Length: 362
Figure: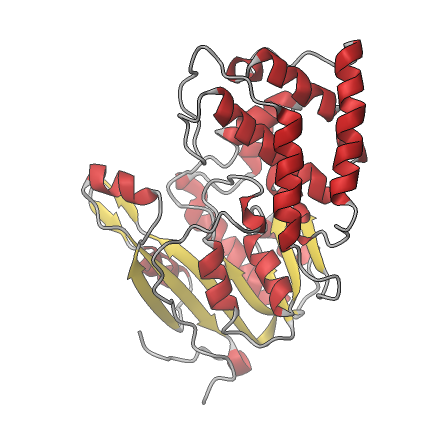
């Protein structure tokens, strides 16, 4: 039987990074390349529903919405959920004006000393004046729209990096550098709002829904047999901590118990296989009989050698086909050189056309 779905292929690209886009709002660790996400989504029809069960900062949801698909994202990391909401927020016409309004209010609070002191752990990463400005803007966080909330998070990360003389990378936090460099938080936030609001999806694009929930329980949030396409980059199966680095700073500033959040995430090596089996079972429930499911995964280095991500998921649920390529243009290349590895990533596809697995070949 011939599948109704397209065969999805990787496209060779020189770099996976695209900072001049909406995806530069925040340096979310482990996110899929926006260029890859766009290249894959462009191979899908322009109508239907798409689900990312591990939506993270919303890269796939934004690109799916932009392509003309009604998009659903699920994640149980509240920081990621807010970032994803920021990307799919469409009422952006007045965001620059709104940001300037909050900045003026925050400056008045700064003059009057009307702000809370930043907690003792995160303040170690900031110049004192920068920290005060952050806490003044935090006074108005709940009033901000979803886009401004996401930019606020991203500006915290950018300011922390700047206060440490930009020695830290865009996605990881290094040791504290003294003396701290003053970074004008107000100017940075206004600049980011102006920069990223240019890339928002058209108001006439289909809606997108971001759900704070557990993908092991997808059928609680998503209507059965309602999803045409699943596209995701699942959590790494080597225990990447999605609440660490810049996220830890933000959780600490908001005095949120990130350890409790971390316990709920799929990021523990000893439970990963069972967790993913549960997710795949839930995906069978929420997808249509002709659905196409796409996972972009990678290799994992272990003492015994390399675990191929495609092989790992094929053992959990027999795949229709797998495409593979070496990493290109990512920050991981630095670590690959140090560790003497040649890591690869795979696109793993399950084609449910007519309820059967269709073999396309590798």
